[in-house]
Image (cartoon, rainbow, N blue to C red):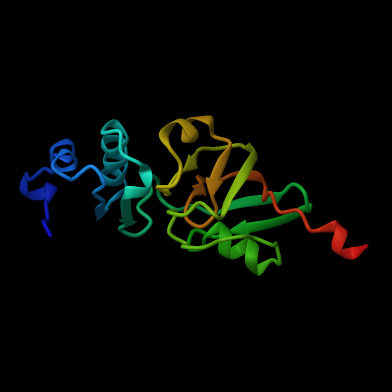
Length: 166
């Protein structure tokens, strides 16, 4: 295991580290979102399968301070308020909204919701979506990503099995 502390002027050369791995090698990285994003880019550039890159996030280090925001679930007409100290996923589950989720760290993408409308900036704290997907601004991970105040309308994608009721 190696540790590189940016505060001490140390830098990890991801391209060299990944090139030194055997063709079927794997990499395990944990750190802040910036490092994980750089690792994903370097891993993709190396032509390796994304399944070989494993990572873990240091907490929920967003770009903006946590603010309260309102969420409307379009298909249910449900309205909830997410306080600064809560995740959107937790509030939706508490309100009885059926959600699919797994890691609760923004790594697996199971809790991703469709953004129907947002009147503010989305603070993306996940490592699941690629930079291109983030630019589309059409989906977000409910477990860690947040709206920077204001209101957001989402579609959870959940559709109850209507055939079971027949």
